[in-house]
Length: 272
Image (cartoon, rainbow, N blue to C red):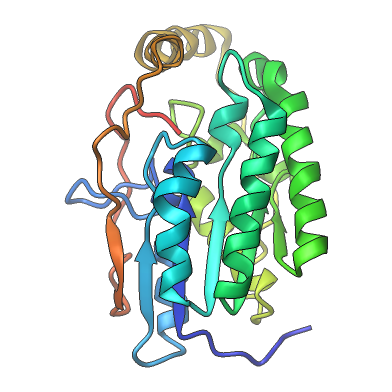
């Protein structure tokens, strides 16, 4: 059922998933689902304002410290909060602390915005994800509980088989392609009660898979360009987001059409 609502402002909080990594514009900047969503909301509301505080690589503690207070001060109609997944992908993680920090973030943001939106992030199949899946599902269960307690909306991307299709993931196997980000934007759009414009759950058309040689070549490239550097950062505590500012740190007017542009492959060594 559509809720005939007009949202005049949006603040996005999180890590690389919300920053929009692997959905590159021609100028090298990232677009992503939050920008696509902002563009669509702006078309309905003259004077629409948008801020994106997300920075790649951020852990939930950093999100709570650096982004949540700023987002709360902005008093936006909609705030999206996606965080904690980077923590689950660390070699060692205190899940109790992660859940406590997420609880703190939700408690801070809920009274400061019109509608808080949480998310069960998508995850593709594979040996790397299988190792961390129990942590991810523990995080998602907690998200459901927080949403029920605080009246937040939950966008459930995790239970949608189509979003596990390798064709919706970039070569780093951690970030969605432009098409994947568009599907996420549509999912949030519909969760906000707005009229569906596309079936974001629809499977991709059937296609012949790559042959054995092509798969092994892709695996070797992935290991060299992405998995190795990713493991190295995890072991040393470094992040590609260190010292990087958010791309839209202020809640300012957003003109429609800013998300337009073709996607390209990100540089090697990107991370969530």
